[in-house]
Image (cartoon, rainbow, N blue to C red; front, side, top):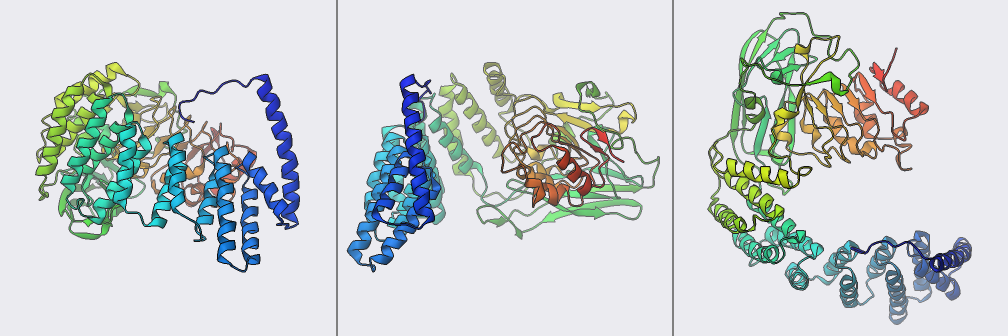
Length: 615
């Protein structure tokens, strides 16, 4: 239960637990005997009911009862009264089990199975749900089941929306009701149901509702989450938008014959490739695309223009096609080799120790380093749809939330609103940028571990140095280690990164990392990655050469220990055709001699494995 602290059991409780365990063992033994012998008598079925009332998580018992119900239905000759009696008895038994544990997956699944027989009173299910949701309004099993029952009853989304309104009126902290409301409102707007056909009118009503909630109790997070969802609905475009690219618009690139790509004097713009070609990366607001590499075989200067028209091949998650014609261009100068190919960086083992990284201090003669970081974004002039209603909504919200600057969440919401308002202006100038930075600075002082948004990426940029390669040939490393990061974002700003240190964080997934197509060195050590399944993004990183996965939780659960023996992202992306030179996996539960031998066999290009040089 939410909000109930755990208490140490008393001696009399321990004695009761022991007696219950002994009773459970006896019941299980008798039940399994009946199950194996396919005994479906009244006594056998009642015994399974007793077992499930004590332990609703016994999936074998639920499966047995399905077989018993099928057997009883067959013997009833499908007499309507007998069928209803059998199914209603089963529903009562499930209800008894739910009273014991109303978060039992098996019990809810079994109840759905019974209702799908089509002979039961579905109206009674809503009354049962009301009782259970009064006990725990945030029981997601009950909410999922309610959606299932509503579909069977053909209840309209409007009726269900009214139900969420009733629950919110009783308790504005009902996060599940707010979440369900967002799902219902989205469906109603998508279907353009009457009173939901005009998006601006719908959102204005919802803003008024949630504003009452957050002003009633500004410390409650439920309303704030719903407000954030409304803000996203207000500003996001339904069709895909091209937001960033590499190379950036207006870039002047030099590609020399030694496979050394130079966008200027800054190491931020120095790239190494394995062939005389360069990738074209397009980053959309909903998904990134990596186009085939551009091959430039002859010497000379090339002005490349990229134009996207009304494309049927680029579709948003909502089913909308790309409909904002845009273009950008860059110049590539292909020159003959001027120096020997660089072979220091990548041929030696990489060390991620702090002493090998030095804070980057730009030379005074270098161009402004903000340019390659911020000018990745596409500056495309195109006809925007009438956004006056969005501007009106955002302006009103800004005015309202200036009254809640005493709270952290109020400051954060205002910063988000101001940022959204600037994004609506078709100008490179951010009118509210100074105020946004001031708000984030105040948040950093109030809660330093959680708010670092005001910091510049430059403060996390380091130059990697070792004894065997020239430091000028090594790319800048973006070190975001030890920041307690639990998720990643803003990839459109990071397309330039080749070396990334994400170690000592709280990452359980690296979704989105596939946009960083230049990434060649990646440190994910000391995170909470649970299996190779969570490394799916690595399948798209064709330039990846060095990968550190040490001291994660890979193989910590039984489902993962044999993962590498069958189909997995490791086998398909890293293990199949991956020509990486260095991999570190030690410190994981899966790392043993057998696994090491497997990696040596499937990764013939490896030069270093777990710090040991391979022959």
